[in-house]
Amino acid sequence: MAFIPGYEFIIKNKLGIIFDFYLNEQKHIEYIVSDNKGKWKEKYVVITELTENFYVEIDDKDNIHIISFHSNGNLYYSQYNNKQWQNHLIAQYPVSEQVILYPTIKYVNNQIHIFYYLLYTSEKNKAYLLHLSFDNKNYKTNHITTVYSHSYLNPFKIFSKDDEILILYGSVVNGVDQIFITKLNISTGKLDNSISLSHSKDKKIYIDGLLDNNKTLHIIWSKYDEEHLVVQYLNIDTNKLDIKSEDLNPISLSNQSSCSFPTLVYYKEILWAIWTEVGKIVSCYSIDMGKNWSESFIHEDSRKLNFKRYRYISNSSNDLESILCDVVFGSLYPNIKFLGFGGETDDDIPTS
Image (cartoon, rainbow, N blue to C red; front, side, top):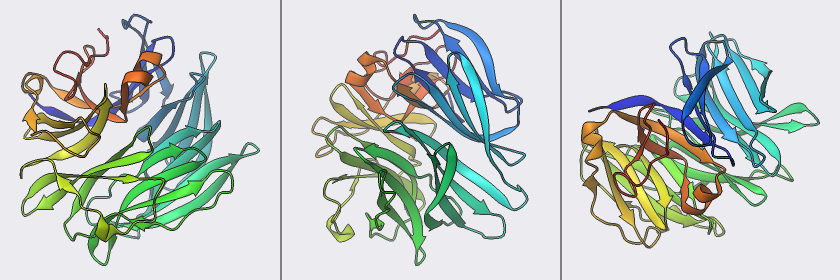
């Protein structure tokens, strides 16, 4: 079968109710809600405007938050509580001059934080990473960094750690793709200098990461090796960021192939690296948190199913104890089953 581009958001609250957010045929943000037994029920629309991209978050009180950028240049922050949506227009951008990519919203220490790339149509291969925070109900904008790219602009990743926000991103320096990390102190607003995590000259795409409970950041990406893509992995202790890129040695997890969209999932005390390869899902795993890895193998279910990527966020106590992830691969609605880790049939979310 086939890998379907794009992704959806699967959100599960403390009651076990599941929300599946996606763009409908009109490119409006729509979602379907299950009951607490996983049976799909009604569909609803958040905003009836053509949507370019969006991101969904759930806080510890089960309130749902969305940041969305629309074809008319509107940037909205939407909040769902007490079974109602409140849509707030944050900014309006002239789309003939400015475009937003990868809007991201995070709930950290009882505060909403919004990040996105701002691109000017007049400036090729250049983007500004901006941070929006609330200050007495007003939005405060900070410029995090300016990044440069070749033809593909890598997404950035946001992680929360105590009173800090860690930002993982890629940028071209002197014509070479590199990976960086920086941290933002939430209380003081101080931004540390960026630290380079790579020194090789190969092209790096699909940068992704996962912060575990011990504050180790696991990083994964695809590098170009001649005309092929190879999955690379390394990890760093975020408590000790006084590191030199020359001391970091990523390892290869795959063969030379078309290895794309690698992601990491920590499931039942096993760390999984998962990616697509020639239209199938391939993965390998580590039982010692990335020190040693198994051989990669194809998940047979992906030969028989169409599948896509999902961002999965859960407040369910069972999930919080067993799974740590951001993006997972899964079969399509209405019978959504996560693929690529924990076995072909044991990693379901009960939807039908």
